[in-house]
Image (cartoon, rainbow, N blue to C red; front, side):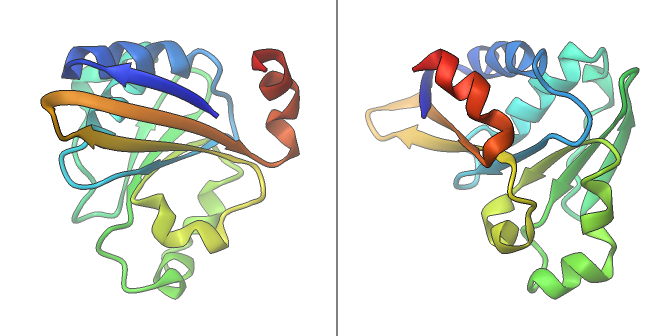
Length: 152
């Protein structure tokens, strides 16, 4: 597990932009944390790396927004409003996994339907400083073992 301390929104955006350099088609990034913890700012940073920073909008009511990046589509999900995983299947959510990069806010709600390989970023607010966040990055599955071993 890797930890990053963000001291402001711009730190989160900059870190996510650097993180995005390693993303490729079929990568799934689960973004977990309470409201206002920085999940959407993280997505903004990823889109910034791909030259799409001016296109971001929250998919709260549409469940998923699609962005056309040069390497592949980027799908930005907000699954907070789903009643259960069957609703995710009903909308064809699992079909997105093979077709692009998936960024899933509130992804912990559908973790049991995710493929075995994904990255989870957990956002934690700092009780002592309103602007600080701790981001915990954790890789799941064999796909990320090599890069995980390099960091350790």
